[in-house]
Length: 300
Picture 1 (cartoon, rainbow, N blue to C red):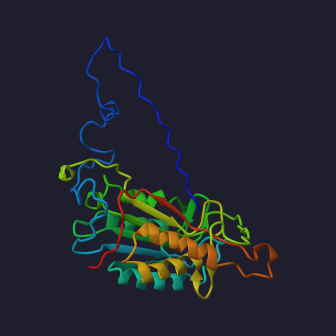
Picture 2: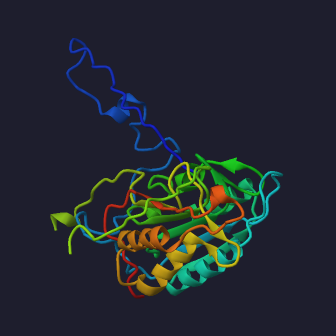
Picture 3: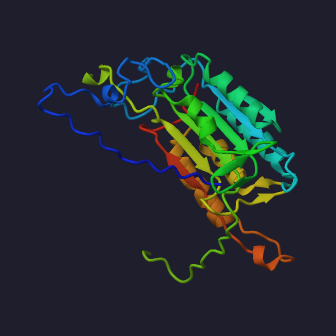
């Protein structure tokens, strides 16, 4: 499932120069000039790193929480059990623990229960944490992910962690891993053959967008299937855990995810000869990033 949010650039009407020469800020013109956002939260937070620092501050007392929402069985009749998802969950939990995360696993929750757990974490004090990580293992469609009882859009989850709603994570990475289909299209791939083509002012306070510092890594691109092996787990989670285990404290996250994409793209191909249409199909992960610095899981 993929989610595409269209943003409309809407200009405010110009003020009548005969009435006043004092132009207000856009926020004042929209009725939010009281220092609060639409949720009533104060629009300020502690600065976790210098303004132009090249890397996120990963030297807090704790790495942070890692939530894994593992969905195997569903109340929705047309959704089959996701055999192999428990392998993904166990492998990822072990991997994230090795990266010093405090891992919490939730199994087959309904949407209201998922929201309750996420909101509970968003309301915590993360001042001593480097970041937060949330993984969802489930079925999906274009624009939607499934909880045990219904489908929902991912923004229901990540919106709890915007800088204005969760100020103790402002300026810190919010990492999402999504293992789910984003549609029902198939990618048969293209065969490449033959030879290769080539044998202090920084310490001053500063404002950030509420939606900065998010990273969302999807197992597949919008509109396409995401493949899962019933014994070994999904292609994406296999590759992600392998890369994080081998190089998780060496490379930055976008470099790691580039090699995850390489592994999924080159090392996997569906093997379903009994269903010719599904046989020898490929997959490529998709990353949406609003990170503003390099993210490296340094040693604790």
